Image 1 (cartoon, helix red, strand yellow):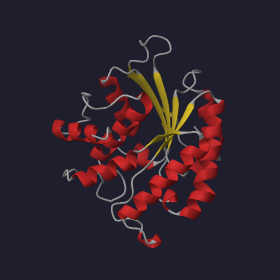
Image 2: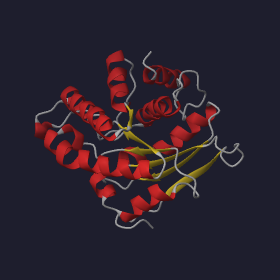
Image 3: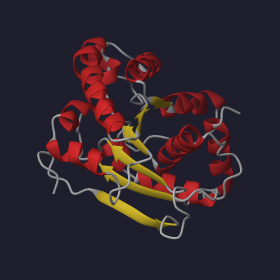
Image 4: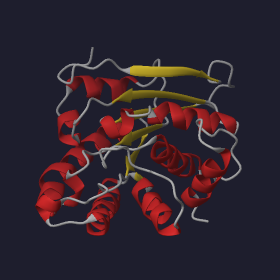
Length: 243
């Protein structure tokens, strides 16, 4: 078990890493919360990547409601970052903040930025590359902070962009992809019924954004649909690619 957060390190194999030539497997550790674990974003990403011929192994530490500050203070998380995958350094470590923290400037500056900096340093010291997974705003915004969907998403996007610059991390702009999907007029429900967590389509769109950011290749033309209607999946891949 991982200390503090009390969650086992969940590792998904079987996407081709065992038989992949040495040095060709993409090993990704996801550190986040239920925005990552709902619909199993790591596995959706891995299956999507495998359909593009990319050998992938993923692991996840994502207890519900966890913030980056909680992860940064947890010795088990530090050990998972340093330990790599079977002693091999992670190719990438994807960091996902609690959904509301980036939307409020005070929380961003006092909680997100210091924690992301500490985690990114640990990732770099382990010989891996840190990435920040930019999340999506709540469907109805954050009324307690005077934010509707658009202003909440703008604040989240800026928080992730600035923190990525400050920490030398890569950026996975999934929230921006959600914004484009909504603006496109496609009748696809990206949120679950709670208006916060992702539907399967929302998770798939985030996975497409991850594929582009981590591999540098467009997700357009990939075959895996995660069980979505093929036309819907194709539209989401194009949106993630910025088309």
